[in-house]
Image (cartoon, rainbow, N blue to C red):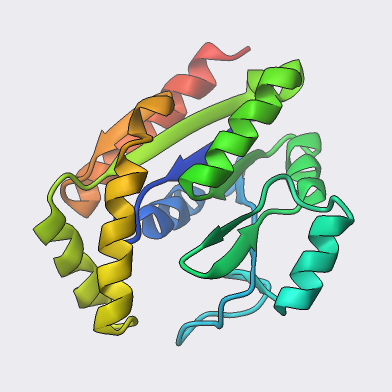
Length: 197
């Protein structure tokens, strides 16, 4: 059996990373499991606790930070996010590839931990999804219909900073259509599985 991978996917809000991660797990249900991230943000319409995120209060999140529960954690757009280290370890220990959708801060923390942990480094695959056109990014965010204009403005501004980190990732997907983006992510996944005994 090939080595279990920890696949870290990042990209600005509106890059489609959540949809791509969902499609990858649907395409490979026997081998990939998405690690559900904890967050202090409120659920969006249609989101379910324990399926989309583990929704929690800021106080509860901060208690878990103090207890060293998270693999990484960060504040993004005013809310706290982080995957539990035990959830990641459980996936990898069971032989499943673990898929994480994290921001650039989180990915940086995980890479730093990988530099100090050869087992983590051997399993780590990092992918950045870049939307190069600011107008297209705004169109995607507006099209979601979930955020007010001031939030969209903040996310577009944050995307410019996030794009500066794209070169830190092993793989870069230049976002186009949903199908093209999924084909690129799938190709990366299959190539990484093939090269790791």
